[in-house]
Image 1 (cartoon, rainbow, N blue to C red):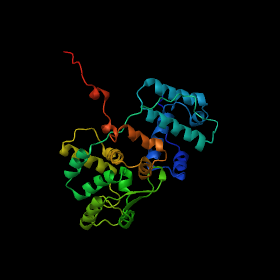
Image 2 (image 1 turned 90 degrees about the vertical axis):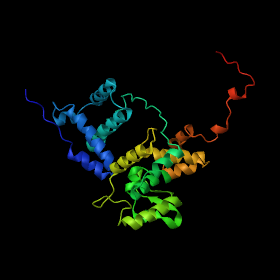
Image 3 (image 1 turned 30 degrees about the vertical axis):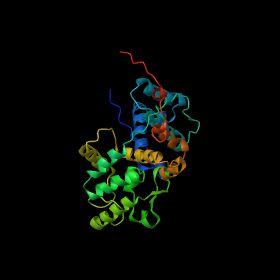
Image 4 (image 1 turned 180 degrees about the horizontal axis):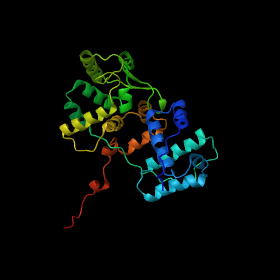
Length: 292
């Protein structure tokens, strides 16, 4: 029996994603997940797959849930990628894919570093460019993608602001420009003299995001910080430390670029602001019987 050939991603699918200005990250994810769906049925012709009923598509995703090996995020992205193909490319708007019970995403609290651990990591970061990038992640609550997209003109020193263009969700926003960070950036500029991008790779162009991850891992290990953390942990730490300083949550929401206050409110669960002023009732008992 002849082995079924792999099905390529339809060109119209990719064209539609680019036309609607989806991010490259989303395009890559959708592309791989649609390929996975199509090739799970590669024994069938494309016109047969394109005519699948909603129940046939849902069966594919139910099977995925039943294996228990895929994350909630992976499962939800798969539904969205397949749905995009049927609704936006094939114009089959009747395909809603609402009949699969999506697993509930566990509510995990963000990992946060103490101020002491942040200081340790920054202190051992000897390379000036690397230190500026890590300082940016913490000082302004930036994402890696926002750091590598910064241009020289985005550092608005006269206003003490950083302009972040086309961040997550294609949104522009401003965030804090720390005076200590500004001093570091001036020192960095005098040495490296970047042309367009604030941080450029060795051969020009944007600095690679994966290199920032590598720098952070190396500096965290060198600093002897044992807490689990990634570069994104510095953004979580920025938020938590602002809250602990008494900054209003509404201002922090704007700085982070969150659409919903609910996204920002999760940090209330991990801050020690005001909690350290509350005494446990156990500590107020006059006498305690200690059992041997």
